Image (cartoon, rainbow, N blue to C red; front, side):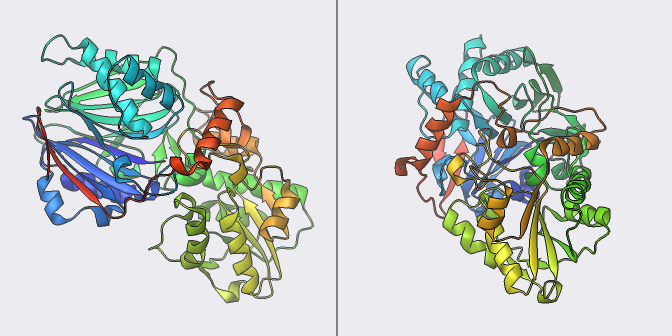
Length: 512
């Protein structure tokens, strides 16, 4: 799961992109990058490993000139450590010069990489599927360019060809040197991409982002979502074109965005994340009342921050007190997307500290957004008991995660999932809780569907259901990715705090 931004403005965009990345920092803390483009065709890049605030300094920002640009925050989905070579955006010099940033995961990545080398004579230098996606787009664009001119029709034809070749989830922003910004979304709309506009006396400015909160904080009005399969092309001077480029598009957004990843103040595909999480709390409360009406609960406590809305609504529905029982250190990253299991386990105690008075002698219902590996949950239950809780119940606003997620979320192996081969009683025993309660999948889907006003009723739920919407995932594929993940050779090397600056001209790339 990553965060992407693309902007076409009337003034320099470096500060806009930086501020947008700060707002999307929750989507990835492994690496960050910005590319800006001038009307002359010269592009400027800076990227590095780490948080946005650590990657960019004043000297870097000054070098990022231009009124068009894209940006990216990354967390790794295929390894356990950082690697600067995997940081985005990626660049190719032909045709014209293209930079691209991508959120999602391509399920036919290896096939694309092989095809690029054997048939298209393009070299993919990293293990990143985003670099493969960039080269597929560049190749399809180059095939259709008749002269050193580029029309919107040519761009849309290239995107249509990408849809035919690429499988999986992808939301993309790219800049074509001297021509403008391209954004497109996979035919199922699995990963989110919203578009906003900001009128100015010189003309409209446009911003595309993974979440609407990036628009709100920078003065852009949310106009609409990029549709599944749609491409948007905005020229350097702000002329906007759009076209549906997929044969049979169908909106099937990833439901885990609303469970965990997105900020509660975001709206994606017309769905308020906050409202969806309130609905999850209502539905979960109804289940607890139905299956354990005799349960003696003194207080409901959320695991901050993602579960607050669900926990609050659950408490209200059950007529129970809601309390903040954990104080969060906001300078520790999100444990679910930290790169190594040992790092995740160690960081829980650094991240959360219990307020003893809220636990001592009480029967506590802890509410979290989900239980994935169980490492965090086990530590939190232990902290509650050490703080004096008499009984600890654990409720998950999402169903049990029992299957790999192959569309861009770091839960690819069944062996890592605590729910694999265990029922709720066994999971409770494993994490040290007196009981565990999971949301039913139908109830989760209903919660998010209700937040859409009933417009969207089908969601990508593979990590809960084992049903993969793209239709190309089988047991052999899952075995392959699990084997690759287990191999030490597949792990990213440590990129440390290295940084990369590039000034990219139309015909050359200069390392600084």
